[in-house]
Length: 189
Image (tube, rainbow, N blue to C red; front, side, top):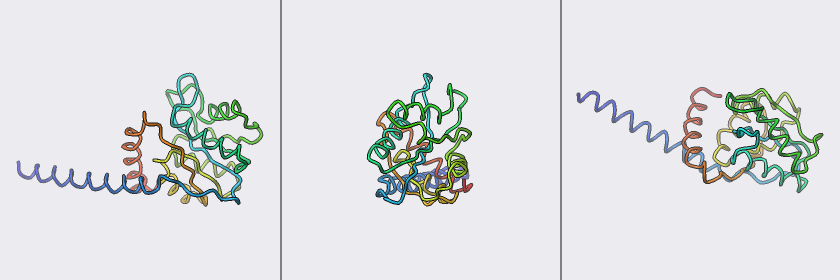
């Protein structure tokens, strides 16, 4: 019996330490980077869409952030990423394209990557859509640490742009992202 208690205690301790370390790493990278006048292209990482094909709150925040960059002239080209999940009516990238066009972005300024199912695939497939390597990566603030690591692994020189996390999804998003960051560090993608 004591052996199982020891195993449980060690496992719990390691789990708490790993969670604390990754949570701290996420928190340190949440503010994003400063704008860079040499960057012309933004990659918006995909996220959940609703049953009516509209962006869920976290994705809408990402899109609103890139809209501001576009309207202010910091971005001339936007790459939207994301395939179709089993519970989604269309691809994330198509829903993102529609949202951006409804808010004034010229369709010629939007490129779609519509096959990916993960952050790593978003970035790998986006690298085939553009020859640019110095790009803005727009994602939720909690997602920036892992997105930066993967963008650099794929060959981008990223400038990270944070979109605020909606309070309604913040707690769930942080737990999920902490676990995803651990998985990324273990499996390198």
